[in-house]
Amino acid sequence: MYLELFKLHELPFRLSPDPQFLYLSKQHARAKAYMESTIWFTDGFVVITGEIGSGKTTLIETFLRELQADVVVAQINQTQLSPTAFLQTVLVQFGFTPFDMKKPEVLATLNQFLTEQHVNGRKVLLIVDEAQNLSYRVLEEIRMLSGIETTKEKVLRIILAGQPELNDKLNSPELVQLAQRVRLRFHLTALTKAETTAYIDHRLEVAGSQGRRIFAEDTYPTIYKYTGGVPRLINTLCDTCMMAAFGRDQDTVSMQDLDAAIAELQWVEFASGTNRVRVPHIEQGHTPQSDAGQAVGRILLASGGKTLMERELKPGRLVIGRTPDNDLQIDSKFISRHHCQIVTQPDSCLIEDLNSTNGIYVKSKRVRRHNLNDGDVVQVGQHEIMYIDERAPRMRHTVDPTDAELIDKR
Image (cartoon, rainbow, N blue to C red; front, side):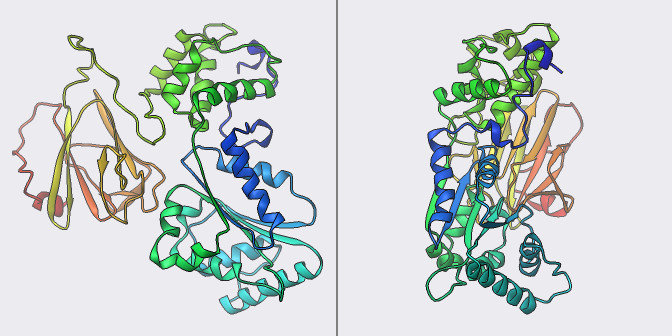
């Protein structure tokens, strides 16, 4: 790799969470303090939310590394579980083998364990990452666990971390009692422009740069423009930049390398503060090689046998979700805040799940991403999206936007 060229002893922009690389922005420092408060207070119950790649998992790993020996931890990362399976998983984290236990025995064992730890002067902490995927029934089990107490105090501290959809669930009428148990909530936002620069330099310093400026000064604003200050996106772009510089045998990253990385990743500018991205501006009179201003396809959105709208697809990205900040809003409880995106290029069109709760389906199969072909129908919650490719000349019946029968038959 490029370590020798850049005189580094570690890869600075790995995507795996590594506590030693944690950059404590004001937001991250505050979120970490909230996590630490679960140990200080006997009724500690904290919810930390943030967009994909905002650094929640790295914060958790850093927090765990600093815990004292008298804290017993159960850390759950697999959250698509039934209530009983979730409780069994918690017991496994505490050293039990509960797979033959029925739910009453699991609960009794948990109660006894928590009480024993309290009597012995230990604090017990439950951390659930990706908690937005927990079902309402599992969240209700967590509420019941949070109520276990002695005559004076609670015996279980809880941290739930997840994407913004977690807040949507906690605000639902079904979970009013659980929401009332939460002591602190905090939403982790993206880095500012200045913090993005400091973040890059911090990771390079930890990796062994010893104060050397590896990225040219003029690259930082563009990196922020294309990543929106999201740590995971910064890591991806910076690593690709360094690979581009390595390919030219240069020990500094220039705008030339950054442009090459952006082209390789096929990224467009990130709309700061959201999960949206915007199509690059095309100056009047400029005709790009890919005819970026021309519609190359369209989608029909339908639900309940009725077509609701039709939308042209031009080169760029179309983000679909429940909230108004999306390019295409679907106001439904089955749709996540930012559910999926359609990436259109001159020669292809891809739909990609954005780690939504309910996913996207093609031919009844859940997919992470799918290259769209003419006539494909994608199930999104209780809605269907039909893709029509306008690029290749061919004989096709004209599709009437008000005719949803075609979608239903597929």
